[in-house]
Image 1 (cartoon, rainbow, N blue to C red):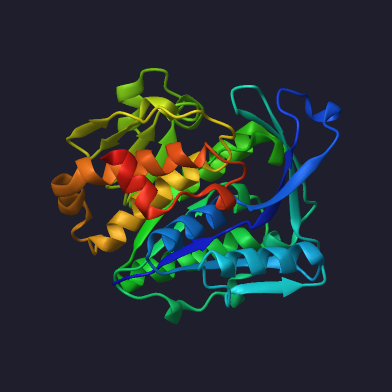
Image 2 (spheres, one colour):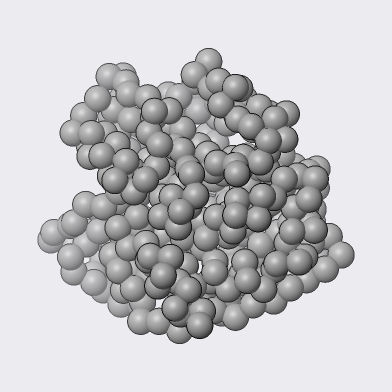
Length: 321
């Protein structure tokens, strides 16, 4: 079976003890390991498949903490480099009463952005592997070039490429810079996961069906359109499969989308999906894949943080019934 490789940011989420308070008024925070690509890697490992993180952290206590937590989650950390040139990234979060979030990021730059293409080894990747990435680390930096090398290497090896734009506009000088970077990398992906909040921004199209279809460019074979508690839809070029979500009492939505796509990619590894057969695999198994992914995302909202709130595989299977 293949392995999930996540490339991008690993950071500390500082989550407020108080809920429903503006970030400027938060008195105390709890630290939690995070970063969307890291959350996905942890979810895949949590459910029983192999995963590895490709990133760079500072030579600081926060970096030590993150390596320790990734290893505890079952994620391979030998491709997480360390540097004294920049600090580990931090994100401060404020939670509204419904569990939704506001972010304030500290990185200018952070260590993850210093990962270089020279540190990516093509021989890491094999047929059946999946490389997952997001847009946060696609700002102009050595890390952007590292993404390009990793994507090219896994594609050449016969692995799948998964892209969750995971838009975080406060990290970009201009919103259009973010959109341009996403559209630049979109054609390299086999699977694109996009939320209802991101679709119009990325596509520039108001009408949902037309906006979804506009994402089928380059290598894109499947679009996973997530709608929060309302579930998710899976689109192939000529088909659409719908699924409903699970009702839970949300405490913190941090990492819910990452847990969703982590559950989705875990299923693809279980089913030995490759670029050659992924459409067939999705067509034959879409109901079970979407159920598992929806349950994974929903249950993660019932705890604080992302990696620390991941449910067990048994809990996911229990809620599916």
